[in-house]
Image (tube, rainbow, N blue to C red):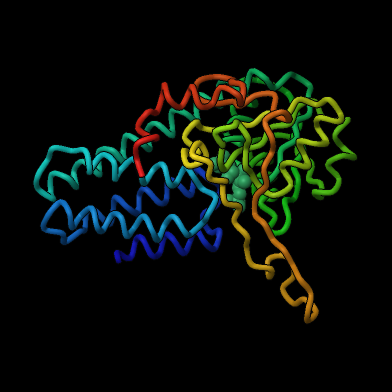
Length: 308
Ligand code: RUB
């Protein structure tokens, strides 16, 4: 197995690379690098190597359909290519990787442009965890001249909220950090909630950092609009066939490094926010209702339903 695959999988598992977009970008780049340095002599050998890389990367984090879709996109392109030689097929891998990365970048900018308009002047925006899609959108709103504050949660157990807080401060945005359990306390002082997504199911439910569904619950009770900023490709096609999105459960040591003997510690990384709590998904197609996700995926990314 190529070092880029093993090393990237390890960095993803250890959260040195975090957030669904960054995970997908690191994974697809690793696959491209491994393909470029492949010693395979025939198409089936290259496909076998790609399939092994897929197995290793898929299990590095269980709840990352954007990463899975990125790798499927590359493999699907090789499988359906009429090119015969390995060197031609490696060129296909490089081309589709570049296409995929460009598309992700364009989506991020489109989401930022759309979402920025929802941020009202003199408002307060709450976010949870660290989503590069959300922080990019908030930076765009600031560049568009909006005056607003950000409230971000710590996001226990590993404090990704601190990454958000630093990025917001660097962007010159007034920022307040709160502990996760203070969300309800501050919800009435907030005008808008926006979070990222790791996965979107066929029912339009969203999976994001643990605690997101409690934030959504508090937002609903306080009648504060709750939005999700996400690329459509975080959709998990397996959910249409009845599979549940798997929720990654991480090491108890993240919660308590030196716990008393016999204590049970549970540490799920993500939870499910049901669609009825979500005002809209801010995606590259604009603001959509979670209900319309299947129809949109069928129209925009039909390949996703064929790729395995
Ligand atoms: C990060 C998280 C983010 C989503 C979206 O969790 O839940 O909200 O991944 O991020 P973790 P992005 O830190 O455990 O990876 O918008 O950057 O894709």
